[in-house]
Image (cartoon, rainbow, N blue to C red):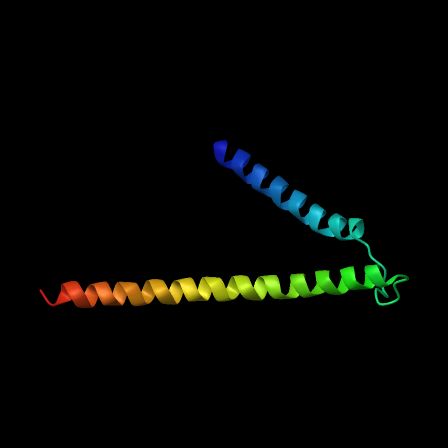
Length: 85
């Protein structure tokens, strides 16, 4: 009986997640022509936000890859140091 309850909870969670995925984009509607802004300050804000949202994930990816490379090199160095004994 407990297995059916867990399955029902999993199905409800999946249905809720799908519902959110289909509803949330309609909450974030934006104009289709964002380049037709009226003021210079709005245009600058749009360009700055676009640059930020473009380079943030790229920077995060470089940080993760750099951390992984550094960690791997440190482990290899430790294995080399202690493997000689």
